Length: 415
Image (cartoon, rainbow, N blue to C red; front, side):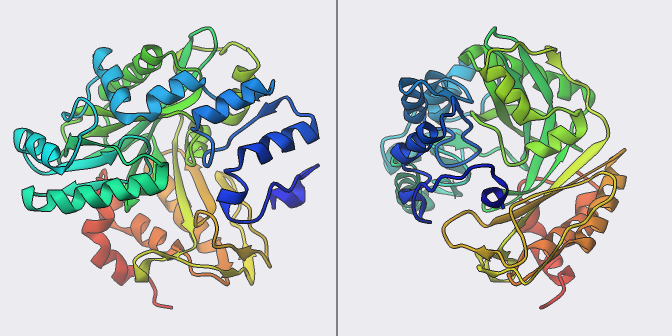
């Protein structure tokens, strides 16, 4: 749909991303053909590639995002952790840098105590990540995680962290201008995940007390200043049931779930990115007070009955929900063929209301109105999650889907 609606579109290659969206010469060529002076990288592909940032600069193009130095620092998860630790921001106990091999990882795990998590040093998004429950699992997990990291990021280096019990995934949206001013736009709770991939996000977090919320915002501001951050970004934390929070990583880009924050703050984050990139100052600093409650559901072309296997096909019917407090970000239309080349995300369904129970009710109504036919989606799973007492009655942890899948599966209508 973005190609259909665009004033001008430039072909950069065939469907496979290795031949198109990851082809830097093709992207730069498209910029030169159109005569643009800036490139917005979105939230995938080259969005966190520091080499691409430098190539844009060398071709007199403004990259709408942070500088390459900051991106390299935050992109190396072990270096990012060291930087935050130096700034006295709480970090998860673990290796000071990367671990050389499975034996070294096992020695550290014995020191910290199992379970531990192996993570890719050069990336995120759940790739190159393995939970290790005891020493007998270490060697196999290390080989698999390193191989996955190498395939996903071209770098198989891993680091090790102690597992935080019953963790909640909470992140703070930040904006930082060229003058060093920082503004936080509240937090998002992204704990409902499958395979370390976010599925439902909400703001504000149902877990945090106001005191913790303020402390986390201050930690996010300190994180930005510690690395000299500029533009939009997200500081991600793991939080335990006692609301102790630990720095996990910083995403040096806009995120898929940024509309949740836009709904509770009124800020257009992409617009702010462009303003910052062209040198404008932030109108406010500190922390914005949020209003109401927002929830985002990622509607994916995947089959929850078959291990969330991606699904393709042609959309035979497509109808969007509407009404106050409902937003849909999507590229779909009837007759659209879901390709095999990209992420399975079809649509982001975002709702807002005055409080969490009202937002959940509005989300359920919007899901009922949403019609996507021709491909298998996770819509009914999202409905089962939001309808469950486990979700509405508390603050889910990152193990929510795994722990509740049998009950959720029973609640999903069979096709």
